[in-house]
Length: 144
Ligand SMILES: CC(C)(COP(=O)(O)OP(=O)(O)OC[C@H]1O[C@@H](n2cnc3c(N)ncnc32)[C@H](O)[C@@H]1OP(=O)(O)O)[C@@H](O)C(=O)NCCC(=O)NCCS
Image 1 (spheres, helix red, strand yellow):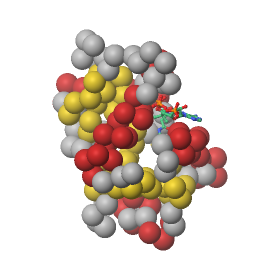
Image 2: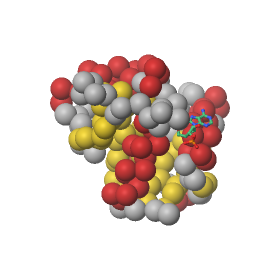
Image 3: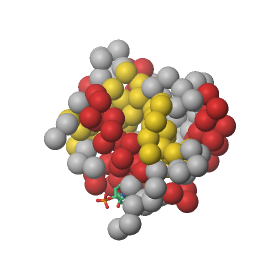
């Protein structure tokens, strides 16, 4: 596969309109700021995807969320964002939406128990009206 040209850098306030448009398109909450956000940009420095890390009270880095804008899916952007985060944090956890479980499996994530999810992360799913449709699953990966 020919790699599409993109690179990864820290998120900037000026990126937020793009990032929040991508989040909105997926029914996700808007980002309030760029803390913990890494952005994949094209060769004109336009964001094409992002990953936000939220460190839980348990000290573990949670991906919340990772999004690639639709035209750029399938070009390795999501994998590159996740692999870079694993290099930095050593271990990543997340609660995967059902539809994204195959993506995380492709990246060698494994299931772990709901009881081990940091409470403030699990709270995102508590009482969510989309729970049945979403079928969320806690997944984790350690550096290989
Ligand atoms: C999930 C998402 C981030 C994947 O991003 P992407 O940039 O298209 O992913 P990549 O191109 O890096 O794919 C990485 C691997 O995952 C696989 N993959 C990606 N989506 C997949 C799917 N729906 N089913 C099966 N495999 C999938 C790819 O085939 C690829 O495998 P390979 O590297 O072994 O060839 C993207 O589809 C997205 O933004 N979805 C909407 C938001 C979302 O659900 N985010 C996750 C929840 S937080």
